Length: 158
Image (tube, rainbow, N blue to C red; front, side, top):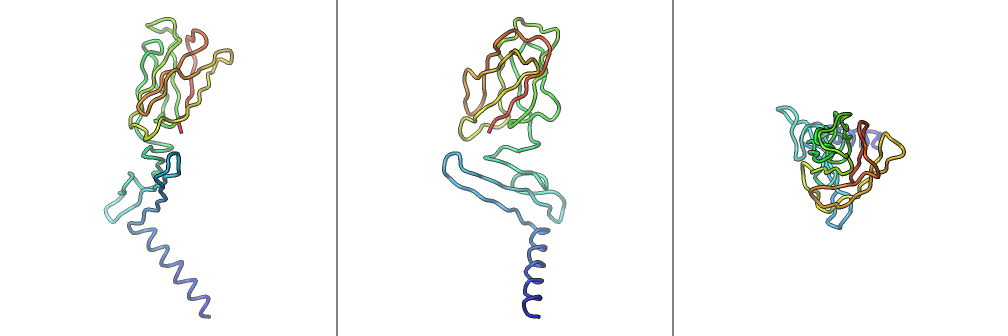
C-alpha cells in the first residue's frame, strides 16, 4: 500500500509541476552541445523563457516555428516558403527572376547562431546542386551549380 501511494504522490507532484511554471531545460556550455528548453503555460496563458507553451528551442533557435530569415540575391524576387525559419525552410525561386542568372543566394538568419551552423541544401531540380560559399553565425551564402529559374531550394541549419 505504501508503494502505491508513494508512486501516486510522485506522479501527482510531477503533474502539478507540469501545469504550473515548469520549464524543463538541459544545457551545456560546450560547443555543439545540446541546449533544450520548452515553454510553459502559466496562470495567465502561454508564457515561458523561450516563448509560447510547447515551443522547443535549440541554442536559442525555435525548432518547428520561430521567426523567418530573409533571402536576398536568388534572382531578386524569390520568396521564403510558408513556415520557413532559421533552422529549416524553403526558398521559392521565381519563374521570372528580375536578376539573371539565378546562381547565388543568401539567407540572413532572424536570430544569430552561437556558432556557425552546419547547412544542407536540396533543390527541386535534381541536376542542380547547392553548395555553401560562406557560413557565419548570421548568414549563409550559397552557389547553385547552374542557373535555376523556377523551382524550390530547401535548407536546414543545425
